[in-house]
Length: 71
Image (cartoon, rainbow, N blue to C red):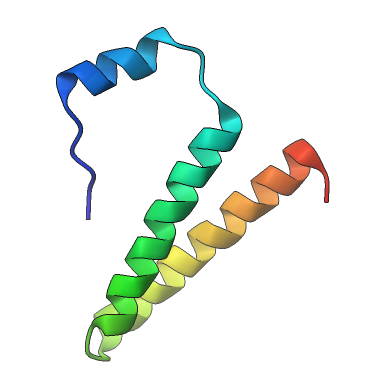
């Protein structure tokens, strides 16, 4: 479930300073898309493990944002 970007996009991202809120939104959208795909998959041990991993990543991301911006 990786994201493929063009070489031009990669170069543009490296040249401009990162926008933390845009980065947060992009990562959060990706995690929500992953959750949607996991929910559509048939239940099995791998699906359960993937759900726990993505849910944990969401919690870590939200905790990081709270540390940076307060509650």
